[in-house]
Image (cartoon, rainbow, N blue to C red; front, side, top):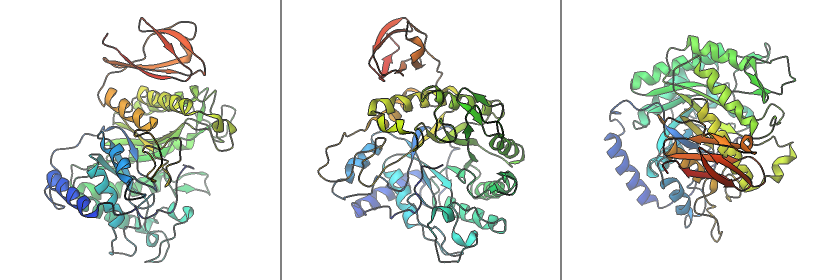
Length: 450
């Protein structure tokens, strides 16, 4: 999607290098005995709510203050996703048979050190697998997002196996990212045949390393158009628009021709193409529910959202006027919609910057002297949502009555009700029989046991 960094940077200062190495090795020994150890019991294919590491990670910044960021990740175990190349990781195989896993090692060790469940996305591919020269890496976005050529599919599968052998405690692998480089310009559709071929080769290679490894795809961007669009419209539609039928065709092909999968992965934005959130930013999140239910009708595999976005496009000036409370309310509504669609695993794409100045950062700035909250609101939301609605939790909308009932969104478990006011004013409603007053755009957690 459009919100990605291109060239990776070094993962950061070697903060407390000796201590970090000791801790990482100790944890690795406890997890798997050694790098050549076995993986143990079959992992769960549903992981709950977590985040994806991007260009700047929790270890980036001034060594004297990164502990604050590491503590933010360590406070609660979260699934944490990392790509093998790009988004903070260097080229893992600059030339055939010559590997450089230093930056990826640091990212995986960070996940271990903070108690997370590591997930690896097998993207992107070294230059020599896509027409470039061995030993050279072009970090432009266009080059990074080029798919390996068909004659190098086996080479990419071999690299995936090498990654799996190196990190025996990593049980979950996503194959590629949004079909990058697989769009067929001559046919104006996705090359789902080519992607499925690559996927199948990677799947076989990973299962050969260890049959207990869990593999998923196709990591499709569920792109949608405004309701007035007709050319690529599909039956998967609503007031929020229509999902591009070419994306659905790609999923249908992969779903039929894959050699196997342990979970299904998609991503997407609540906004339609062009950046419009229809009918508004809250009701647009209903798209996540609709997509999830469409997928649930076609597969019984666990459903993952590798990324989800709620911000209008950059050309939509409304985003400039969103307060922190407004943003948090829309994020909460999106998570509720994703859960309502049947997903039990979702990753927040971390927009972290080196200076920590972003409204949706997951940890405080690592710069000295900056007074920031220990737990930013988005991180707190992800943590609480993960604890309240872990995989396997039965949930339902609560019963809401009152004049403003339609403006209130809810998701209830046996113990808790998450309530979101979608209006920028105070509302008074009744939630499951109890009177509740909500401030404008308030996100509130109610004890459901009283």
